[in-house]
Image (cartoon, rainbow, N blue to C red; front, side, top):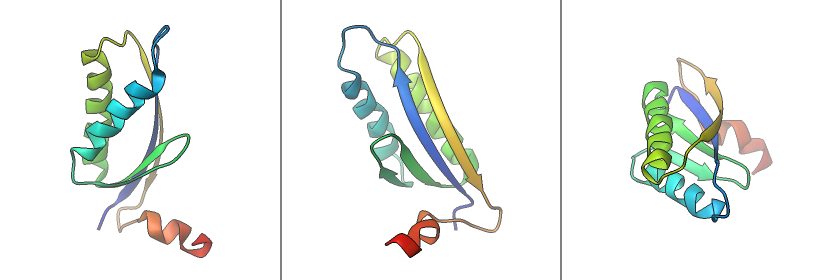
Length: 95
């Protein structure tokens, strides 16, 4: 079972370029992994082992650099439970 949820909002600093195309590239990094994730209007939430999720954040930032983005802000929220945590259990009463 996953021990962490990580929500991330990538904000690339780009002038006169389509911000959403860079966000799409960041989400593609997540899609290339085997972690469960859910895209929301202002952030994307990932479910997995904390160490793996932090590596994904690093890859997302590195991808922005590869694309020529001079600066990136990554806003990250982490919920960590060593005995396990899932997105479903946190939102089940709202489903």
